[in-house]
Length: 292
Image 1 (spheres, rainbow, N blue to C red):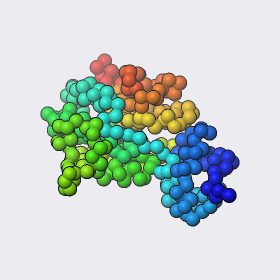
Image 2 (cartoon, rainbow, N blue to C red):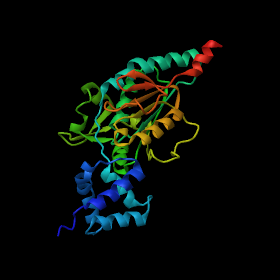
Image 3 (tube, helix red, strand yellow):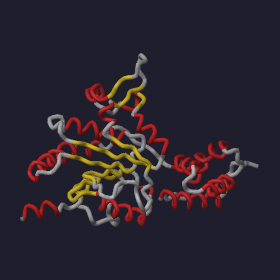
Image 4 (cartoon, one colour):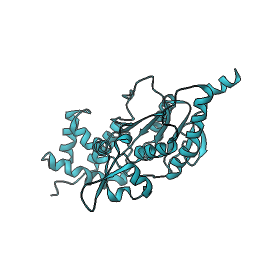
């Protein structure tokens, strides 16, 4: 008998658990994926059935190390530097000039706060750090802070280290690679590391987007939220709840970026669509100031 067979009833137990813990809605077609990814956890715990592993995880509770390992196994973390490059071009060519102008007109602090909700191994926040460094090179007084979060602790550790194999940085233009990355000491070099000044502007934190209370100060609102290629794994009720919470976390006039295969249609009507999966929260604050 195959001791690592995943039975249909066991798969249903894991489907329900994964949905409850991290909001990922797995179709029946994902049974083989769950089987293959969890198999190493059975071996690590010296177990001979998926039901035994499920019982172990349940007995240890949602805050256990083993639950974290289960989530790490299931989550998908496909990302690249400058992925969906039009988003970064829009920030550099439209959002940054607009914010520079607004800061001067309304005498507000020259700050920029961004949240990457689902940062994976860090390519997205580092790409934005490079984009902003280029866009603000004549405005050194701007204070930039980025929060980069994920539910997967393994990818967060990778992201915080800021070290990438040479092939991972191939999408980075050569001039920016020389400017913002350090080569490894070995020749020929096989890895690079993001420069410290960029790493220092990013805080990496484990955040489960399904939690009622996020570990973010209640008074903090962001100018930009990235949540790209995350909600494709959520069902509509979960998506609606999440984007309603994002509304509260964005400043008036703030921007939301989602993935190319995602949409707010039927999910949220709080944002104005700017095309190419770029959305904006209406800015009533400065409209009132101009009227006054």
